[in-house]
Image (tube, rainbow, N blue to C red; front, side, top):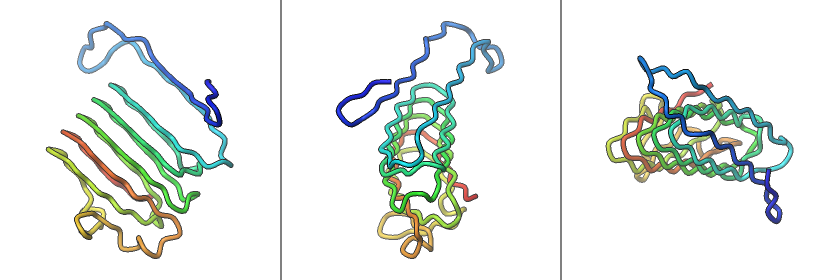
Length: 159
């Protein structure tokens, strides 16, 4: 844990494994669980290389979230403790799965090359070059998500 002015930084790094996977499995596994105070607003920045990551942020007050991923699988769960959340996602060849509360208003600005998404399947409609949920203007909690990706799969699911 590093304190820099008024910011705290947590860096989790794993050693590179030079192992060979058989049928998609390796004998190495890393597991890190980080608990963050839930009563302060947070700006979070995640830089994920080749990994499978589960980020449950549903009990945190999030102002800004930046997620950069390479060849990763990311499960992100958001909550409604924040009124307006600004999210920036940059992904290479990743799978990004985002769970949001049904009452959350969504606006997604997606610049993707060869990526697949399910935005229309979950009820988001086109609005000025973006995707929006029907409740975006009336929702008490909203997320604006900007996505820039190469060859990724991006999915939204309501809970």
